[in-house]
Amino acid sequence: DADVTQTPRNRITKTGKRIMLECSQTKGHDRMYWYRQDPGLGLRLIYYSFDVKDINKGEISDGYSVSRQAQAKFSLSLESAIPNQTALYFCATSDWGEGQPQHFGDGTRLSIL
Amino acid sequence: RKEVEQDPGPFNVPEGATVAFNCTYSNSASQSFFWYRQDCRKEPKLLMSVYSSGNEDGRFTAQLNRASQYISLLIRDSKLSDSATYLCVVNDGGNTGFQKLVFGTGTRLLVSP
Image (cartoon, rainbow over all chains, first blue to last red):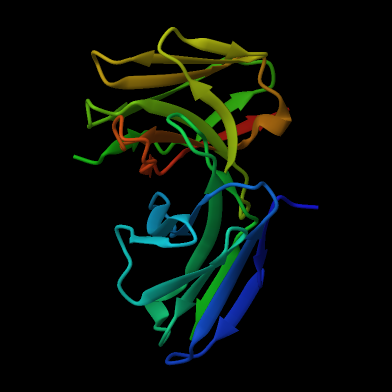
């Protein structure tokens, strides 16, 4: 089983709909992250969380919100989806400490029509 | 100037060739560095961390030059399975323990028979 699991894997929806992407992990990491990836651009950080009570905006948080329901679960919501939010979304986790790498889920391919 | 810059490629090489990728970063306070590999439509996977003294893992060698703010990845004896996009990743969080990973857009490698 994957250590970092994202659901759904693919989603097609219409403009204006509310979408939730879910991420769960079995690595026991406190830190969790949401990224999006667009063609020709590097991964960009949307939100990150260092523990259940800690939520922080990344560089492109507008139009998104998150919820850290438990250490193992971190959800990303698009309150009112728009076409330029069509992208590949990744959840990642990491352990504490300097130099710790991040471990990614399989990704969610989201298309907004 | 982009925070992390990579040649997008693609690099087309025959099996058995040696290929080198370069990456420059703009923040001199960056503390940790990584190379990730990403297959088409898949999640990024950690290939190796990059240490100040340079490090090797089998056919892969990573080098860091802090003075020039430059990171390299050398792949020897290329295999067909090495075909992927290689992401240069820099932790811009300084020494606070915070991991602000900045991703390059990746260098694409195609290894042919």
